Length: 84
Image 1 (spheres, rainbow, N blue to C red):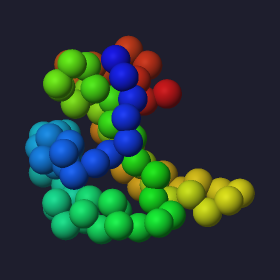
Image 2: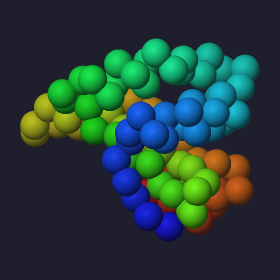
Image 3: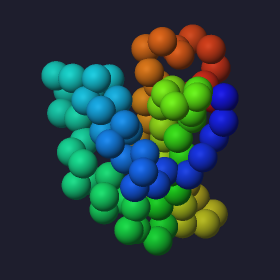
Image 4: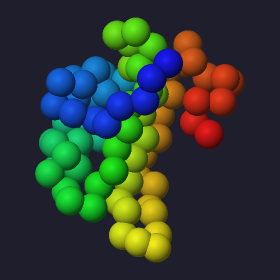
């Protein structure tokens, strides 16, 4: 498993996972993630297992604080400590 910064290359897979994980609970639209990529205070990471997005998380970093906005783990990778 490797951790990388969210990029436009991974955005489609992250949005797909968002829809799967938060189905029926108002998942973020792609435009929200696009805005986060342009936000200078935003910090977003994606956990990759090969080509699969195992999870992602991010928020706003305004020292000395960090505000978590969103966090999701693919169902196949849950209960393995990934969200820690």
